[in-house]
Length: 177
Image 1: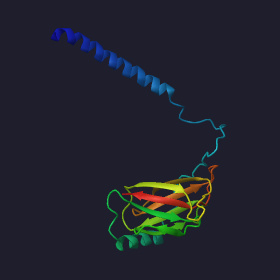
Image 2: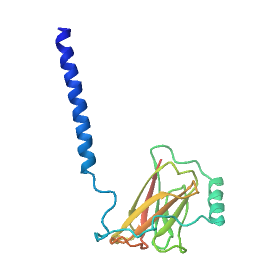
Image 3: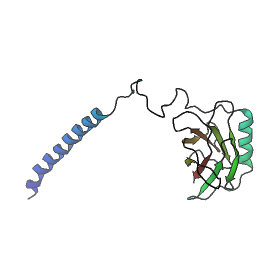
Image 4: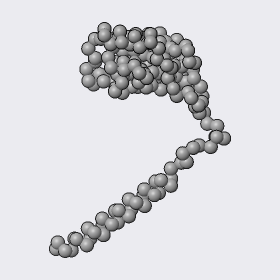
């Protein structure tokens, strides 16, 4: 009986290998081209060079280091630090580990920094456009969040209008521990 399964196993292995190679070729052929045509005018198309963060100043680095030195214990695993920030960069509501928020005025609209009192560079971030007013109806728009360049205890947030243009928007931020 062992000799009966041996030829079948070889045929099955070759069939799987053939289908895998053929499937990979199909997947590569089905991918869209690497560069989209310039004539496509879709909403939210990003302007070149808009993906960079503002430079870190010496004062900002000192402020972030001071926040780390005055640290509370980081939130325990499975919890989140959070903040509600207004469109002008004012910290409206926040958890204990959030130290400050600011809107960058040097580099255009919609760029913010939120500083915490512990290292967040390897944490997960979630942000959404939102307010803390009684009606709680935020304006439409988009938000992106990333670790702050060269500051381990800060988060960079960028907000845009629904058409993709940089715009000041209030937002809610969560840092997942």
